[in-house]
Image (cartoon, rainbow, N blue to C red):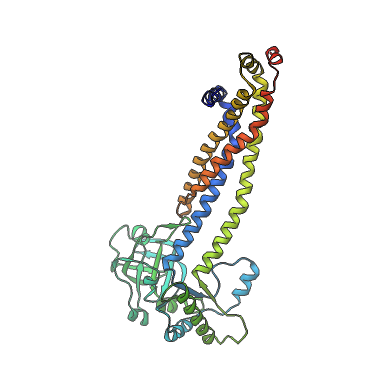
Length: 407
């Protein structure tokens, strides 16, 4: 029997028992969908972090009180005891760093903002130095950013995100409009370019003001983050980082042999650590998800054994008409393999759809690893064939006379 005829018979058999076929496929569908979803989300998370870190540029690093990634409560307690990074630290590095191309500083808090009778809460108030919009790659689409002179004199001017324009000012031109941030008046002089959402949180719900104005209103007890742009990535980045580290230790009077009283985060170091964590998550989650494939394979084998029992007379008739053991074996192996392949295709569609849905909600890019799609289809088909061999062999070994006597 040619394999195309075996394929046709397999399709007919699966179509006759549609409900049983669908239920049999669930394990394979769930397994493939879970694997592809995990790989897609891990890739998307890595791409998102890479994109966000590189929004400052691969040649920008930060100096802060605490690291970006803390893995334990003990670490948090240790870092929390450090002294704050202050404007004096920033000014010392600004005045003495020879390799630094640009240096900025910022700090933030959540505030309420009011304009006329309208008000909103949960707005990010950013206290920035004058060059922070450039360091942050923030394009001003209307108006301008605040100047060094306005920072020096603690002017009450602000650059706002599009959420402020849309939700608070109802889409009106924001330039020269007055808003009140926790009751303090500011004049809007600039509107930032729309940035969208990150992990479901809007990146446009902010008000940026001069850092000196921020500190006059909220005090200097809150730590800030220093942003440093080096002449380039790689070697120049590490050399600039080493110089800034030396300057920070000098400014903060860290003793020789003691740990730094601050954290210097190079983007590539954080990105490497984050990818290690997500890849470890994937390495654990994928085998767990793959268990569903094994369960699906066992279900397929069980259903195929039931099918052999139900079709004993059919097998006897085919053998009596000249079908060989090889023909019977081929028919049932193709049937189980086809069933698993169909489940694999459905799982691929479901996995990509799930990844797309989560990426839309979370706000990071969809990154499909096509190797995972190919691997999912290959493994699901392999599982179907592997677990279908035993039932197929049982069918092929049936004695035709005994099979014909079966009811």
